[in-house]
Length: 482
Image 1 (cartoon, rainbow, N blue to C red):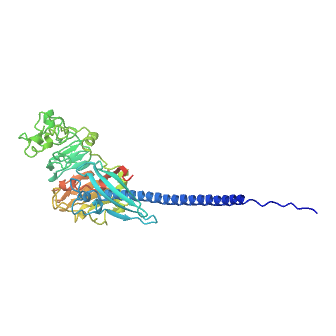
Image 2: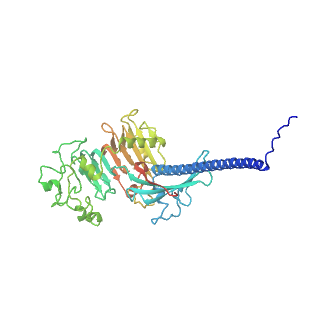
């Protein structure tokens, strides 16, 4: 009989080890799975928070961009009124752009749920400071509690042009009066005795006068060049002192503040330091300020060498704008629907700030824009106003004419910045007569003053510079909540 071999059963201890191994493996897998799930969840949360934080920063930056656009289009007039001199919020702030407690709030459309709150505060107010500095405070939000805050400084300065009458040539006639501004020319100025000046130049703080890099003459004429032998006020055939400072029969200076290329030093003449010696201007501090090379002992010379000297001393140059600046002004007018290609058929823009661009080169070359049609509300304010006058409106108008001319007459009153940016045969201001009154600066090719024209610059105009003629640059970007 054959016996079979019996296999021994495994011990109870070996069964326990196997079970424990399986349990440990399951626990390890579970732990790894849970860890991966937690890590993945945390990563998703972190990614969402990071996305929301990025979206919040983007919203803050959008607030900054909109504030910069506001400064370029609307200027700083309303912002200045929102703040006291000590930096505290003024009562009765009329714009949310300048209100820290109730700032401009905008919700951005889209899935990110973005919004921003932004306001602007002056650091060095413009135009009292040139350049002015304004701080933009912008807080952006996205996806619930996510928020980021940034600040940016905006530097505001005027484009480098002069406030006054700037032309390649100027012709007087009748009894044209120029009040509190000067004439700057790169060509001849005719019939000087027909142009009467009054007051202190509001832009420079010096007596109003003629400053040209060519010749000032009392002859009748037009054009950029003239002969030096035909009635120049600084007659080179006379002795130096008499030539440099012409006087009347009583020895009183006739044109003590005029400058041209025939003039010369005024030391030892009745014209030297004439501003301080007269009862009209003697009490003004700028004529006693030794640190001011232009006004101290004014006038010290009647000589202006050339165009470069005119530009260096007074920033008076033609053309007033670069092509890039002109393109920006044209774009601004297009955005405001105040861009025209004809000298007729346009409408008077509303305030408080407006820019009109007449591009006549292609469709209406030589067309003449009648400024009398603009001399209506709100642009026909009274003349010679102080900055704090209740009649001084917080507004500005810019008129740019390319490829054409302008005329102003018929008892009209207009306050504007007028720029005729083309050279011959265009860019002429004609028919400035008929007791017309113009407040502001004029850039042109040729200006003819007839009849009883009155040109003014006043404190009201200087205190309301057109936003379109400012440069606004961004600097000192900071994320303040990092």
